[in-house]
Image (cartoon, rainbow, N blue to C red):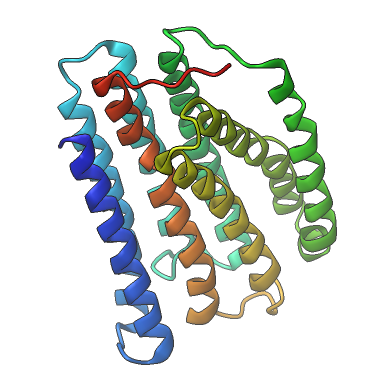
Length: 265
């Protein structure tokens, strides 16, 4: 599938997801618990299909070019598993066990995204990884913001669950630092293009969706089924972030194809 077609489908999936969530929350539609969560998995599987379609489209390109959508496809495959574990379709209970296992697959998935973006940024610089010195200073700033947020909003919620406590802290101190930092690099490399802004928002949304999840789900007594309202509050941000972050492979392909590459100064 051509990069511009992938972007159009991404926008359509994002719009469809928003319409479904609003319909369910308002009572306009009644999907049932299984139908609701199955819809989520189908949406995520669709993102995976788009990444594979883009990879196949780039089959005549260099190995480095093809690697970007392939890494994103691998990341989506892992996060789909994480989404299934987190859903009401999973037989893993209670929610503390769900999140513990899901965190493992999300860590694998987001690591794949990091590798894909890193390789894509190298392509924009003729195969070299060039990082302006000033950008390194953003890492401790993002890290400090994440740690403060974790301490004030998450730590108390998961203090009784060591795996979730340590795991969520490591997530915030590593992947949720690297993803937005790479998105900022892309934003600068593409001179604040619309696609780069979308990727930046996606990186923030994904991290923010976890903050919403941990702050809201753990207000409930352990063993209490997660209500649809709380699933939706996380999903709207999470799936929006997934769609926007997955703009990266297609927008990169467009830049490489049209040779309108903006280099980092």
